[in-house]
Amino acid sequence: MPAFGPRRQPSRRGSMADVPKDLLERITELEHLFTVDASKLKEVMNHFVKELEKGLSKEGGSIPMNPTWVMDYPDGHEEGTFLALDMGGTNLRVCEIILPKEKGEFEIIQSKYKMPEELKTGNSDELWEYIADCIQQFIEYHHEIEELEDMQEHIPLGFTFSYPATQEYIDHGILQRWTKGFDISGVEGKDVAELFENALKKRKLPIKLSALINDTTGTLIASHYTDETMQIGCIFGTGCNAAYMENVGSVPKIAHYNLPPEMPIAINCEYGAFDNEHVVLPRTPYDVIIDNDSPRPGQQSFEKMIAGLYLGELFRLVLVDLHDNKDCQVFENQDISKLRKAYTLDASFLSMIEEDPFENLSETGDLLQRVLGVKANKPELELCRRLAELIGTRAARLSACGVAAICKKKNIETCHVGADGSVFNKYPHFKARGALALREMLDWPKGTKDKVSILPAEDGSGVGAALIAALTIKRVKEGNLAGIRNLEGMK
Ligand code: BGC
Image (cartoon, rainbow, N blue to C red):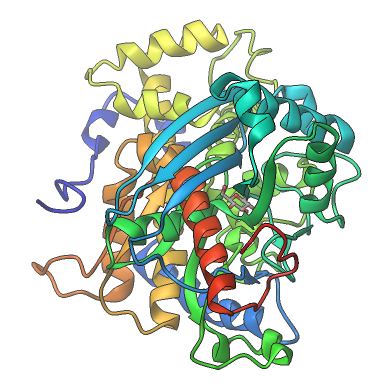
């Protein structure tokens, strides 16, 4: 089965026949702004390779390239009971994972807790108290009190914290900066592992934080657990990023640890920060507005053009601009107050438009009416459809540049890439569009099979976190103590 289904790219250009000339001109302008052709993709990829290298160097660059102290792939025989905590963008998830002796197997129980919106811009204490409360609820629900009191050993926990963190040890991580619209005061520059453990201690829970990990590293490890050809773990969701396995000798910034150069170490690229200097990415005026109005202007330039959090906002900004534009009034004489509200649309809004199966785009019309209270005529519906396609296609094509750059940098000719995240899993045509972009960048001959395939990954933040906790404990037992701070409860 081909990895990405049919190659045909959806095109509805023929249906523009009844679009008036002024609107058609605006659509053509948007096409110029949002289309990334093959030569631009290659230019982005080549610059990306250099920036990945720079991030690993002593001087560093905008891409953090964070060493994770995850120093091996699982061999499939990891064993034990583990907890995993996943602090993603929307939910908090607590899991208990049993890894049996059998290769590649696992059992999982899990509970999800909604991250209250106000927490995302609240303060540090509120965040850690909330997280510790959720873990306590989970533990008390799934275990008898006596069982907890009798526990001789602490349950090892892998904490998936999906924000850039500098790690000197695997159970440590200084938050570099919040991303994905988070802005919780008092956490940047602090060790999140310590803040988390302090909140746990107060509750006297029998838990030991064994590893602090990123969702991409979890995805890499979990995917490799079930498919050994997986060499990159990616997230295309609210944010975007990737992790891959490097060798210590290629990471000059950790040379002072004097580790054997061939020793593997997973790198969390944090490549959402690619091109913060604005050298190569084809930014539109709408991308500039998104950046300026975000809590961290100047950061995560690449991410802001492609990740799920921003796709609906891009779409909204273009429509507002066209409405206010004197030459072509989209939604003329209508009340667009709902559309004027920032972040009122999310990526699923664009997905629904792209999925509208009807020639007359009646579902798109209903959607605009229901969510925004505007009545769109046929040409306006055509505009919305084309705009969603343009934004969704640009996101998929640029997303592929990061993957292609890692392959180039590591001289990987062929491999599987494990991917997760709402955009990858749910956005229509994202996979096919990304696959086509990879083909264009990596120059695979026409009619040949994909050499690099981006495939749905195993659950990185759950199973991946448990595997990394298990690998860390195994490593300590074997005497490889690189990046291990606290041996207590590890042996
Ligand atoms: C974060 C990364 C994360 C990615 C996907 C980005 O905003 O900085 O740590 O891997 O989102 O969740």
